[in-house]
Structures are given as structure tokens and as C-alpha cells.
Image 1 (cartoon, rainbow, N blue to C red):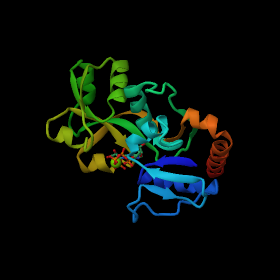
Image 2: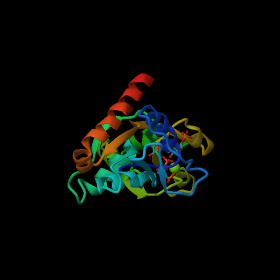
Image 3: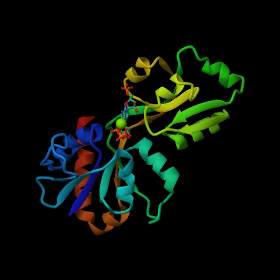
Image 4: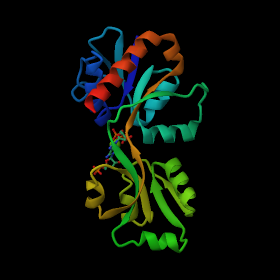
Length: 222
Ligand code: PRT
Ligand code: MG
């Protein structure tokens, strides 16, 4: 049995066409079913639905053989756990090029971010992405107090909790709706296929076929 961990929403939706190219069709719709384990048309392949941030954990500890996770999630996971309990880490064979977005710094309209940086002011930055933010500001030589949040980052500057946020941006509509402006682009993000290294050894043939079919689907798309 091959177990693939996906999160509901954009990652699930954008992974489906790549799986289809590998001949795998998920038998149930996660939006109407409450099941967390979904069968596929292949008797030896199943999909488990987990929180986006839990995908690396499932794959690393063998709860799933492989999974799809945003680069943002992978960087934060690695920063928190290093090579983890198993020491094996995660094998990352493919950039799937899906769920694309970027990690950016945003501030309220009217806040002069450049001046604050130039003057060496200490910035209060709210984010879910503390590892990415810490590295970015350290590299720039900007002093920051990081405030860890788990969601609704956009609210932080509006309530005086923070001067700036580090968050994912796609269309920019969420920032605009909250009167925030993007002042720095930290990195581009897409989702990656991650594989448990032990599973790759034990089930090499089957997993290789899957990786190759997904790679073919990506190059056809491009
Ligand atoms: O929602 P939940 O708390 O369960 O977890 P999650 O937010 O981590 O999951 P999900 O499914 O929302 O995101 C999964 C992955 O999709 C992320 O880890 C990213 O790699 C990727 N992705 C791509 C995005 C976006 N685009 C995105 N736009 N993840 C989140 N957003 C959010 C962003 O945080 C902001 O609130 O959408 C808003 C901005 O969108 P625009 O279009 O208004 O700019
Ligand atoms: Mg979300």
C-alpha cells in the first residue's frame, strides 16, 4: 500500500491533475465526504487528508509514504525539527510548480518601511513564518521582534500588535482589502513532492513509477 498525504484546498485540487497523469483517480470528493482516508482507483494507493503544516510530519515519521507540501511549510518544519527523530529527513524529488505564491513583507499604507530600515529602528513583525522571517531580517541586518501567529496575520498591523507582517501573497487582494502594501518579496513558493526515505527504499519500484509519472505530467504542462 502507498499512502499519499495531501491537505484539503488548493494543494489537493492542484495535485489531482498530476495524479491523473499517473493513472491515479481519487474515488471521493473531500469537500462532500468527511472521510480522512480516501481510496483511489488503484487498490494499492490511498490518500490521507491532513493539515497543510502536518504533511511533512506525516511523511517524515512514515504515517504517509509521500506527500505534497508548500516550500514555506517545508522550510519552517525543517527549522523546527531539523532532521527529526528518525534522522532521515525528507527526500524532495520534485517541484510540482503548483499552489504558487510568494513570501513577502507587508506594512500598513502610510508606514514608511524604507525609512524605518534606514534609521535602524527595531521592527515588530508578526508572522507564522518565524524561521523565514528571522533569516531574512538577519541577512539584511534589520533588528526585529518576531511575534508568532497562527493565522490572520493581516490583522496584526491594523490593531497595533505589529509594524509589519511576513505572509504569503498570491493575487495581493487580501493585502489590499486590509490596507496593507507589499514592501519586500522574500521568496517564491511552490509545492514540492516529499517522500519518506525508508519508504522509497522499501517500495522503490512503485514510488519511482509515481514520481516519474508526476514529473512527466509537469513537463507536459510546461
Ligand atoms: O488553512 P490551514 O490553516 O489549514 O493551513 P494553510 O493555510 O497552511 O493551508 P492552505 O491550504 O491555505 O495553504 C497550503 C499551501 O498553499 C501554503 O503552504 C502555500 O504553500 C500555498 N499557497 C499558495 C497559499 C496561497 N497561495 C495563499 N494565497 N497559502 C495561503 N494563501 C493565503 C495567504 O496566507 C493569505 O492569507 O491567501 C491569502 C493571500 O492570498 P491573495 O491571493 O489575496 O494574495
Ligand atoms: Mg489557509
